[in-house]
Image (cartoon, rainbow, N blue to C red; front, side, top):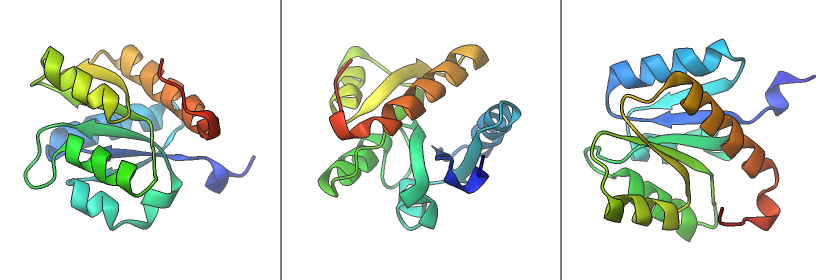
Length: 134
């Protein structure tokens, strides 16, 4: 089993404590993780091409989470995303779903639920040639 073949979970959140805690949680279950403080830094990263799942905040300075998903969609890159936010309403949830989010979770998210959502997103990414809306 070659580790470099496993997809990366990219965490994009402007809050350092959130990045650190989600990173540690996902590392604890054996996932490969990269962290980014902004959508712009993710887009400039080489990890972008290896990302199988995004764990994404919606409200960030500069490019917000929905903007990042829209940018990726325009570029033909549909990466399953788990949205973590403290500012969700039904309209935002629907826009996030349409932009490609797999799951929408309120902060703070339950650890088991977050791990399950990320693992589901990674499975979805492996079968991304036939993307379906669940």
